[in-house]
Length: 178
Image (spheres, rainbow, N blue to C red):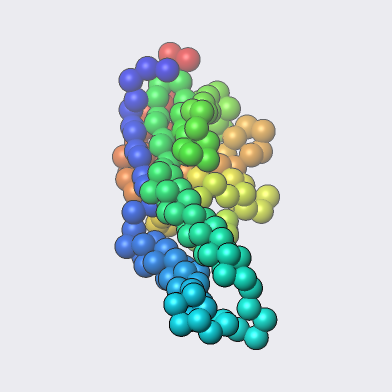
């Protein structure tokens, strides 16, 4: 593939995402902080059927590591889409590390559209909706480039630069070199 007509990289960096993560982290960790304080520092068993001190510490560490793993995933994940003369190249690291090519010869038609991420695809990420909607690769927002492939498959790429994405796909499809 050659020089891109369009390239966009999106990350999960919306403030609402951070608020959700902080709420989840707090909800997961606060009970362990309370339990460790009560059982290990104050010397009173935590709950009606308390676990051992060692079990409480190990559980707290495991939940903390799980939350750190989710944080790293949240920070690292991104959608990369490029429109080139012979097709669209995309990846969604760390979920899809290898770049995938969607050759323009497979594309029947396309349109930029407003969509409902939660209703149509169940949210953001790499999502498979119903047969009516197809597959989606999105990070946030509700504008996407809908591709209709010749085999009947539908793929939507979420975008924050809809008009530029549309112009690039139009230019790619009109280019007769492939």
